[in-house]
Image 1: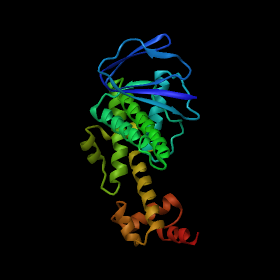
Image 2: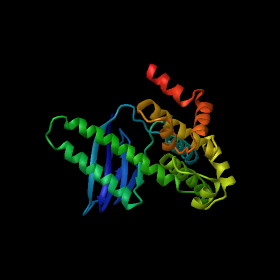
Image 3: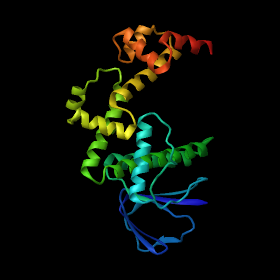
Image 4: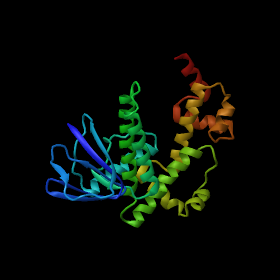
Amino acid sequence: MNNIAFFIVKGDMYLREETIYHHLKEGDWILLTPGKEHEGYKISEHCTYFYIHFQIDGLTVEDISESSLRERLSRNKMDALQGRKCQEHMLFPKQFHAESHMAYETILQLLYRGDHYYNSYKEYADIQTACLLLDLLVHLSHIFSSQFLTEGNEKIRRSTFVVYELLREINSNYKEKFSSYDIEKKFACNFDYINRIFKKETGQTIFSYLTAVRISQAKTLLATGNLPVTSVALHVGYEDIYYFSNVFKKNTGLSPTQYRKMILQN
């Protein structure tokens, strides 16, 4: 089934979708429900917009309660930040507003690139356009999720935000030293409290997750490079080779050397 979407670049658009009237402004996105009659119900002067006509198999409309949506979006974000595949289908909104200038510019640049590909008259332009459409929908999903999850109860938002930031910090800087004092100082929170929240959200304590990330990175280095085990240990944040070997064996059942040998043999 064909789908139609609008993104308002400048000005105001007045759009009727059967019995619902939409007043759309700069930065607004709307995806019309397939099969529903729509028209402009008022002249939209000085309005610049993108009109997107596309077809994607499996695209469905779902009416989700706010609490269910928050839970699903939070689960997706937690899965992604921990390197797990999202179990949910991609969720993106029927209608929303790009609240930040960065979100607005991101959407706009993707649309301009899509328009360029579509009108380029080059081989495989249709494939490039289709790929960019999927990229646009993924970005819309990210932007919508971030905006939605920062709304609501301030206490919940603060603690969840700290967990997100901790996950990003560990994923990016796992080779650096981490201590409860460092975490309290960096995130201005009580360590025991945020550790409880972290475990509730991820199923692991902060240091258990840090260890899991380090061992995962060590396995990659052992399998794909020729670095000595001592160098691998340093690359993932362990200065003591013996301690690294013990932690690695505890988590994998093999010493680093045994693991590398197994990978090479297979």
